[in-house]
Length: 348
Image 1 (cartoon, rainbow, N blue to C red):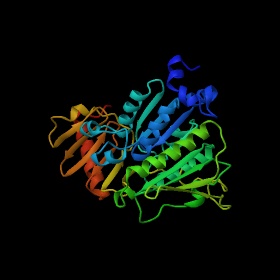
Image 2: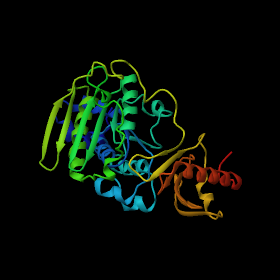
Image 3: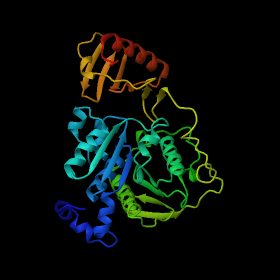
Image 4: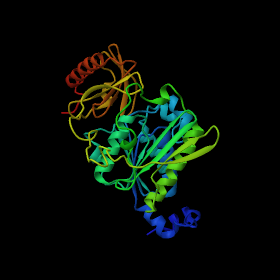
């Protein structure tokens, strides 16, 4: 049942054809996961929260940086100063907008190890990522478990949106079979402008609304040109030899798990996953020899250790900045863990 407060909040929305009281109830009962809480993810989270989607899970591995602010609508300078994880900062803002919904913040990257735990059970997955590898992982999981998802990408003045309904429409792997060798995060070298983000995510949110209301969605790709204010729709048909939605092969979800150190696409950073999840008391980093704490909160600490700069999360995951040398980053990380074990920063 919708409360009197809900009825007042959504009164204008429920006047719209195809929504009404029943549609609003359906939104309140819906569960959505948003993978990535940067530009596109934060815009979509804002729109869906205001619509009244009852449960939103926000998944992001990074903290808020100053370069994020020009293209987001939920993040601000205070989040940068406090080094807040993006998912936490977005959750805090969303609950100020709509305290009647449930919002979960997950501070981690989506991987083979956690994808099914984080995404199975939701009604819709929204793409707020910035790389092809993660989209291929989302696609494999969504197709395998029959979960609708929406691919969203933005660079410069242009955006693309493609709803994917397993068993009905083409999937992402019908059009992109593997990651390109040369490209990472397009924002790092092509740039992006916020009107393109706003237009693209508005189309994605509109499609999300239709999917959550069980309205039929066409298998098409929407191409957005924010410079010319044009939107073109291209019909996409299933690839009869698609490894995922036709042959039921899920190469990016199943198989060998990834551990150790990996360069983050399109960046000068190395991400390191611990051999097992740890529990770190980050406040105990202060005062340790060789460890200089620049910023910290209960989720993450920005530190300098020997010749490394890194973000150390409370589960042991780390992002080493200003390098793409995986071996150097991993050696330094292992030395840091040994020190933290000796000093009692890592819980047994």
